[in-house]
Length: 255
Ligand code: BTN
Image (cartoon, rainbow, N blue to C red; front, side, top):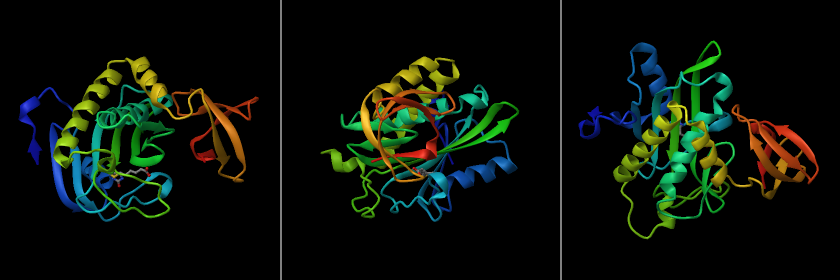
């Protein structure tokens, strides 16, 4: 375990546990929190995950040592359950802010992917514990592709290194990202939700712009324009230039 004495003001990453290999950093943190008190902002970093978890029950594959795979334990009790998407926005914004230091071709894809051009560079999996109508703690899992060169042909993935001329060092990139996350977590927990929303909209692919989507249930294509996002993550979209629909995360995919 590493205690980051250099900057004790920093909540996120102040305690960092580095593991060579684990099933999933999200699972590790969840089990740890079940048997002991975990300090807010604790980070579990693994060089390899044997059962990395992705969104919608998918797995998350990541080449050993090439990428950042880590989870953060966060107190999210300042958010109502109905505001849970603000946490996703905060994390997406932070990853985007990091990538934007290296390339101006980074975009946020609703709900919580970060792309370079049209390829996925980072996936985020947030698992929340809830108490009545509020969140209590959240485990924020981040898989950021850093130097991996080869990806599954169907995965439409890329890594940050492919878009940067100088060599990236995993530790330095991690520390930068933790510092950005810390700043944005404080912005959100201090109540400045507007700053978080504005950044997200500013970098969101398809916001007030028409793009081609398809319905996941029928594979039917349509033209969609993102108009607004509710704090729950529900999307308000203009469909085929006329009808306005409220859309849930699994209902559509960008073509
Ligand atoms: C996605 O499907 O886009 C989300 C991927 C999230 C992957 C990260 S890697 C670190 C953390 N531990 C996991 O098991 N998953 C998340």
